[in-house]
Length: 125
Image (cartoon, rainbow, N blue to C red; front, side, top):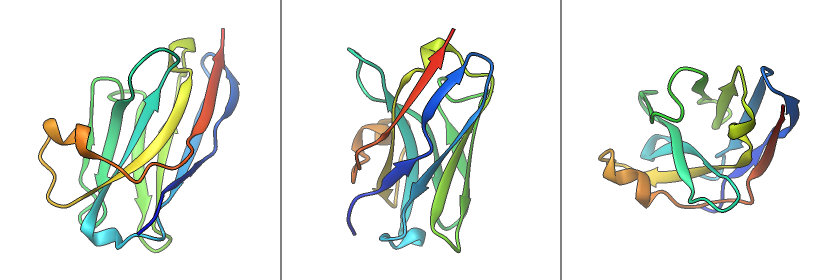
C-alpha cells in the first residue's frame, strides 16, 4: 500500500456544501478502515469520521456528527465525505488516513496513517 489521495476541497460560502473524495485504490480495502481528518492552522489534526472497508460501518467524532456524512464505493475503493451547512470554523486541510483492522476507538484515532497531501477547504463568512 501507499498513500491515500484526497480531493474535492475548495472555497465555499458559509452554509454551503462540499463533497470530498479519497482514493484508496492502492489498499486492500477489506483490510482497512478509512477515515477523514482535518487540521486547521495552529491546531492538531483531528478525526471526523471513518468507515470500514469490508462492512461499511461508520463512526463519527463530535466534530463530524450531524453535518458530515462518510460513505464509500467499494468497487472504486473510494471514500467520500459529504459536508453540509459548512461554517468558517470548518476551514482546514482535510486528509484521509488508513488504519489496518482491527481498530479500537476512540484510542485508534491516533494510529491512522498513510496520509497524502490533503485538500484545502476554506469556508468564507
